[in-house]
Image (cartoon, rainbow, N blue to C red; front, side, top):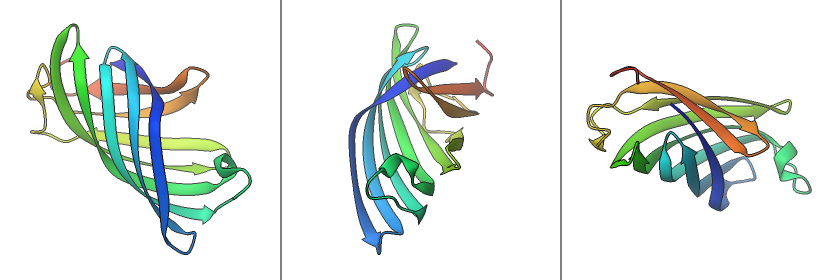
Length: 132
């Protein structure tokens, strides 16, 4: 499965001395998956740049819930999201949480990652419950 997500909303606040932050985000998703993702992140900043936040270096992890549809059928699933942004490079991985799927996603399992593109973050998931 391949989809692209873009940020609809992002709220972030530091909880410890410009090193550890908490963020909640909402993403719009299009592609094989169409819908919305809500995610809750913990972020550790190795180097936080006030003037150019996107040049900061960090590690992050969180839990996300996708609600939407695939092939016109509705459902939802949760996944664990973790990664880093170092030296202008994203390294990410996601793991779908088994037992979290509803509707079309009942029984879903799989792993994946995402990378930046001009249109947003490209999410690729390799389903382990079946190959569509």
